Length: 220
Image (cartoon, rainbow, N blue to C red; front, side, top):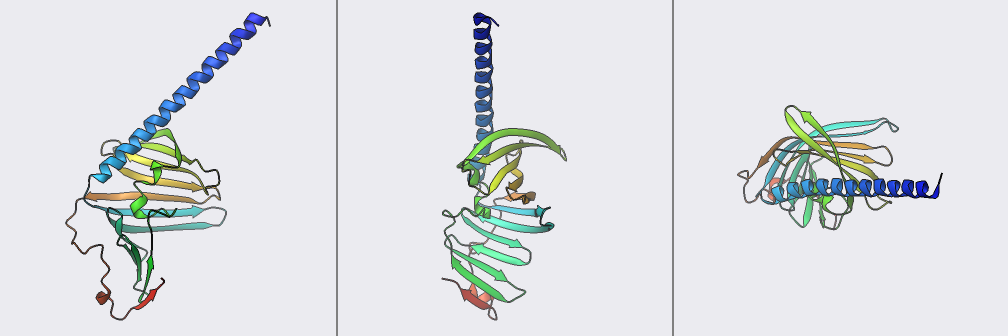
Protein backbone atom coordinates (compact mmCIF):
# COMPACT_ATOMS: atom_id res chain seq x y z
CA UNK A 1 0.00 0.00 0.00
CA UNK A 2 1.45 3.37 -1.02
CA UNK A 3 1.93 6.23 1.41
CA UNK A 4 -0.87 8.26 -0.22
CA UNK A 5 -3.25 5.30 -0.03
CA UNK A 6 -2.38 4.74 3.66
CA UNK A 7 -3.04 8.40 4.33
CA UNK A 8 -6.41 8.23 2.56
CA UNK A 9 -7.47 5.18 4.58
CA UNK A 10 -6.51 6.89 7.84
CA UNK A 11 -8.46 10.00 6.88
CA UNK A 12 -11.49 7.87 5.96
CA UNK A 13 -11.35 6.03 9.29
CA UNK A 14 -10.98 9.31 11.14
CA UNK A 15 -13.96 10.74 9.26
CA UNK A 16 -16.09 7.66 10.07
CA UNK A 17 -15.08 7.83 13.74
CA UNK A 18 -16.02 11.52 13.87
CA UNK A 19 -19.41 10.76 12.34
CA UNK A 20 -19.98 7.98 14.86
CA UNK A 21 -19.10 10.22 17.83
CA UNK A 22 -21.32 12.99 16.47
CA UNK A 23 -24.25 10.60 15.95
CA UNK A 24 -23.87 9.21 19.47
CA UNK A 25 -23.78 12.72 20.94
CA UNK A 26 -26.96 13.69 19.08
CA UNK A 27 -28.57 10.41 20.12
CA UNK A 28 -27.72 11.08 23.78
CA UNK A 29 -28.99 14.66 23.58
CA UNK A 30 -32.29 13.53 22.03
CA UNK A 31 -32.78 11.00 24.84
CA UNK A 32 -31.97 13.57 27.54
CA UNK A 33 -34.36 16.10 26.00
CA UNK A 34 -37.21 13.59 26.13
CA UNK A 35 -36.50 12.86 29.81
CA UNK A 36 -36.42 16.60 30.51
CA UNK A 37 -39.88 16.90 28.95
CA UNK A 38 -41.11 14.16 31.29
CA UNK A 39 -39.69 15.96 34.35
CA UNK A 40 -41.18 19.31 33.28
CA UNK A 41 -44.60 17.75 32.77
CA UNK A 42 -44.51 16.12 36.21
CA UNK A 43 -43.53 19.36 37.98
CA UNK A 44 -46.63 21.08 36.62
CA UNK A 45 -49.02 18.69 38.40
CA UNK A 46 -50.31 19.40 41.90
CA UNK A 47 -50.44 15.67 42.64
CA UNK A 48 -50.28 12.30 40.89
CA UNK A 49 -52.07 9.03 41.67
CA UNK A 50 -50.76 5.81 40.10
CA UNK A 51 -51.92 2.21 39.97
CA UNK A 52 -49.00 -0.02 39.07
CA UNK A 53 -47.64 -3.54 38.72
CA UNK A 54 -44.26 -4.42 40.19
CA UNK A 55 -42.29 -7.50 39.16
CA UNK A 56 -38.86 -8.64 40.33
CA UNK A 57 -37.06 -11.71 38.94
CA UNK A 58 -33.68 -13.39 39.17
CA UNK A 59 -33.28 -16.69 37.31
CA UNK A 60 -30.09 -17.64 39.20
CA UNK A 61 -31.83 -17.31 42.56
CA UNK A 62 -35.12 -18.78 41.28
CA UNK A 63 -36.79 -15.51 42.27
CA UNK A 64 -40.10 -14.34 40.85
CA UNK A 65 -42.26 -11.92 42.75
CA UNK A 66 -45.18 -9.95 41.37
CA UNK A 67 -47.46 -7.50 43.11
CA UNK A 68 -49.78 -4.60 42.44
CA UNK A 69 -49.90 -1.31 44.25
CA UNK A 70 -51.07 2.27 44.38
CA UNK A 71 -49.22 5.44 45.19
CA UNK A 72 -50.24 9.08 45.62
CA UNK A 73 -47.51 11.72 45.14
CA UNK A 74 -47.30 15.41 45.95
CA UNK A 75 -43.84 16.91 45.69
CA UNK A 76 -41.56 14.74 47.86
CA UNK A 77 -44.49 13.39 49.88
CA UNK A 78 -46.18 10.11 49.08
CA UNK A 79 -48.54 7.42 50.32
CA UNK A 80 -47.66 3.98 48.98
CA UNK A 81 -49.85 0.87 49.30
CA UNK A 82 -48.30 -2.44 48.28
CA UNK A 83 -48.42 -6.04 49.53
CA UNK A 84 -50.78 -5.10 52.35
CA UNK A 85 -48.43 -2.46 53.73
CA UNK A 86 -48.96 1.32 53.72
CA UNK A 87 -45.95 3.60 53.66
CA UNK A 88 -46.36 7.32 54.29
CA UNK A 89 -43.60 9.86 53.74
CA UNK A 90 -44.61 13.33 54.95
CA UNK A 91 -41.43 15.04 53.83
CA UNK A 92 -39.37 14.28 56.93
CA UNK A 93 -40.49 10.98 58.46
CA UNK A 94 -41.44 7.56 57.14
CA UNK A 95 -44.35 5.60 58.59
CA UNK A 96 -44.63 1.90 57.69
CA UNK A 97 -48.07 0.58 58.67
CA UNK A 98 -48.51 -3.21 58.76
CA UNK A 99 -52.15 -4.13 59.50
CA UNK A 100 -51.45 -7.88 59.59
CA UNK A 101 -49.10 -7.44 62.56
CA UNK A 102 -50.84 -4.33 63.93
CA UNK A 103 -47.46 -2.65 63.95
CA UNK A 104 -46.16 0.75 62.83
CA UNK A 105 -42.51 1.74 62.46
CA UNK A 106 -41.55 5.41 62.40
CA UNK A 107 -38.16 6.73 61.30
CA UNK A 108 -36.49 9.88 60.08
CA UNK A 109 -35.70 9.83 56.39
CA UNK A 110 -34.01 12.27 54.05
CA UNK A 111 -35.41 11.46 50.63
CA UNK A 112 -32.80 13.65 48.93
CA UNK A 113 -29.76 11.90 50.43
CA UNK A 114 -30.37 8.26 49.63
CA UNK A 115 -29.80 6.00 46.64
CA UNK A 116 -33.10 4.23 47.26
CA UNK A 117 -35.49 4.57 44.31
CA UNK A 118 -38.49 5.90 46.24
CA UNK A 119 -41.83 6.79 44.59
CA UNK A 120 -40.98 10.49 44.78
CA UNK A 121 -37.71 9.90 42.92
CA UNK A 122 -39.16 7.85 40.10
CA UNK A 123 -39.66 10.91 37.88
CA UNK A 124 -36.38 12.65 38.74
CA UNK A 125 -33.68 10.05 39.57
CA UNK A 126 -32.49 9.95 35.95
CA UNK A 127 -31.54 13.65 35.85
CA UNK A 128 -27.99 13.07 37.10
CA UNK A 129 -25.48 10.22 37.22
CA UNK A 130 -26.37 8.47 33.95
CA UNK A 131 -25.39 8.26 30.30
CA UNK A 132 -28.36 8.36 27.94
CA UNK A 133 -29.14 6.48 24.75
CA UNK A 134 -32.15 6.60 22.41
CA UNK A 135 -33.49 3.04 22.25
CA UNK A 136 -36.36 1.18 20.54
CA UNK A 137 -39.91 2.39 19.95
CA UNK A 138 -42.79 0.00 20.63
CA UNK A 139 -46.50 0.14 19.87
CA UNK A 140 -48.28 -1.03 23.03
CA UNK A 141 -52.07 -1.16 22.79
CA UNK A 142 -52.11 1.76 20.39
CA UNK A 143 -49.59 3.84 22.36
CA UNK A 144 -46.17 4.73 20.97
CA UNK A 145 -43.71 3.98 23.73
CA UNK A 146 -40.20 5.33 23.24
CA UNK A 147 -37.47 3.74 25.35
CA UNK A 148 -34.46 5.57 26.69
CA UNK A 149 -31.55 3.49 27.99
CA UNK A 150 -29.63 4.71 31.02
CA UNK A 151 -26.23 3.47 32.12
CA UNK A 152 -24.73 4.62 35.45
CA UNK A 153 -21.63 6.78 35.12
CA UNK A 154 -20.30 5.30 38.37
CA UNK A 155 -18.76 1.95 37.42
CA UNK A 156 -19.29 0.68 40.99
CA UNK A 157 -23.06 1.17 40.75
CA UNK A 158 -24.89 -2.13 41.26
CA UNK A 159 -27.25 -1.30 38.38
CA UNK A 160 -26.18 -2.45 34.92
CA UNK A 161 -28.77 -0.48 32.94
CA UNK A 162 -32.25 1.00 33.09
CA UNK A 163 -34.83 1.28 30.33
CA UNK A 164 -37.51 3.95 30.70
CA UNK A 165 -40.54 3.64 28.44
CA UNK A 166 -42.18 7.00 27.69
CA UNK A 167 -45.55 7.59 26.05
CA UNK A 168 -44.67 9.99 23.23
CA UNK A 169 -48.14 11.57 23.23
CA UNK A 170 -48.56 12.29 26.95
CA UNK A 171 -44.85 12.44 27.90
CA UNK A 172 -45.69 10.22 30.87
CA UNK A 173 -43.60 7.24 31.95
CA UNK A 174 -45.28 3.98 30.97
CA UNK A 175 -42.78 1.57 32.51
CA UNK A 176 -39.31 1.21 33.93
CA UNK A 177 -37.04 -1.83 33.55
CA UNK A 178 -34.00 -2.00 35.83
CA UNK A 179 -31.34 -4.70 35.36
CA UNK A 180 -28.76 -5.16 38.11
CA UNK A 181 -25.30 -6.64 37.65
CA UNK A 182 -26.29 -9.68 39.71
CA UNK A 183 -29.02 -10.54 37.18
CA UNK A 184 -31.95 -9.17 39.14
CA UNK A 185 -34.55 -7.60 36.87
CA UNK A 186 -37.16 -5.18 38.21
CA UNK A 187 -40.11 -4.05 36.07
CA UNK A 188 -42.41 -1.25 37.18
CA UNK A 189 -45.45 -0.76 34.91
CA UNK A 190 -47.97 2.06 35.35
CA UNK A 191 -51.51 0.85 34.66
CA UNK A 192 -53.32 4.06 35.60
CA UNK A 193 -51.93 7.61 35.67
CA UNK A 194 -54.17 10.30 37.20
CA UNK A 195 -53.25 13.88 37.99
CA UNK A 196 -54.57 16.74 40.14
CA UNK A 197 -56.89 14.52 42.17
CA UNK A 198 -59.10 15.91 44.98
CA UNK A 199 -56.94 14.64 47.87
CA UNK A 200 -57.60 15.83 51.41
CA UNK A 201 -55.14 18.25 53.00
CA UNK A 202 -54.20 15.52 55.50
CA UNK A 203 -53.70 12.81 52.89
CA UNK A 204 -49.92 12.71 53.45
CA UNK A 205 -50.16 13.05 57.24
CA UNK A 206 -49.86 10.17 59.68
CA UNK A 207 -52.62 10.25 62.31
CA UNK A 208 -51.69 8.06 65.26
CA UNK A 209 -55.20 8.09 66.74
CA UNK A 210 -56.43 5.98 63.80
CA UNK A 211 -54.40 3.02 65.13
CA UNK A 212 -55.26 2.74 68.84
CA UNK A 213 -54.25 -0.95 69.21
CA UNK A 214 -51.10 -0.88 67.11
CA UNK A 215 -47.61 -1.33 68.50
CA UNK A 216 -45.57 1.71 67.47
CA UNK A 217 -41.84 1.20 66.98
CA UNK A 218 -40.04 4.54 66.98
CA UNK A 219 -36.69 3.81 65.38
CA UNK A 220 -35.10 7.20 66.05
